[in-house]
Structure formats: C-alpha cells, structure tokens
Length: 135
Image (cartoon, rainbow, N blue to C red; front, side):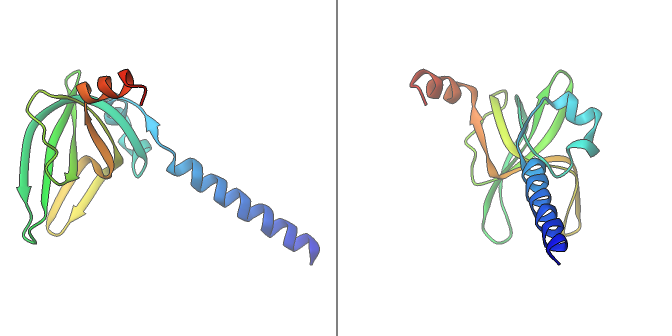
C-alpha cells in the first residue's frame, strides 16, 4: 500500500512538472514555427515581426477584435487578439500567445495562427520605452 502511494505521488509530481513544461512560453521566430507547426501546436510562443494585412472588426456579438499577418523573412503567421490593437501596417511588434496549427471556429478554419487573446501584442517602440524606463 505504501509503495502504491509513493508511486502515485511520484506520478502526480511528474504530471504537474510535465504540464508546466508544456505550458512554458517559447521564444522563437516565424520561420521555426512554419518549418515545424506540429512541434509548436498548442504551445505559448513569443515572436517578433512586421504587421501586414491588418483588419479590425466587430463580431456578430458586438466584440471588437483585430487580425493580422505577422511577417518575417518571407514567411508569416496569422494573429488574432480581442479589442482594437491600435496597430498600423508595417509596425514592428512582439506577439505572445498560443500557436495553433489548425483552429476551427464555427464554419471557419484558420491555419498557423497565434491567439494573443490571453497574451500580448506590443509595438517595438513601446518595448524600447519599457526597457529604457527599467520596466
């Protein structure tokens, strides 16, 4: 009985640690994601690039959202975030969010998308200001 409890305790610790590793944020680049989308699927990533194909919309339920392509070295991934991200075409940004190789939403299918709803989209000049102020 004691041995079983020890094994179960060890297994619980392993699962908790493995879950922490799986949810850890990975700093990477767009080319790495595009060359191995399955390897990043479901993982929280941090990438930098240039804003392209920017669109701010309002959903059928009245919720504002922003979608755009994050481009770097000829490749790009889609980015989705709630609210008005206050970006312009060509802005350099850092995006933190969960990458999904394939995302189904109602009748729509999205490929290679970073959902930054629970992450961040920060302009390069904001990053420089934050670093300059020590934050």
